[in-house]
Length: 86
Image (spheres, rainbow, N blue to C red):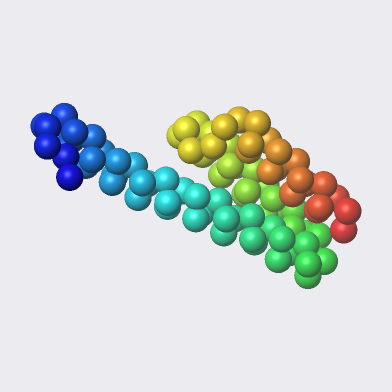
């Protein structure tokens, strides 16, 4: 347990940031799963719409500092390649 005032504040901030990051990372996984489900169902229109949403959300997370730019680009690229292969 924290003994100093600054350490107590840091502990509080960590809890808030952990919750926020968990929300964003869970949403990233759900958006990705939506694209994969559409790909497995061989639904080109749904997959295209889902990958567009995923692209937008992943880059939104980059602006929030949740993901690095290269990580988001890699994920979007792999999803787009899978959609194009349908």
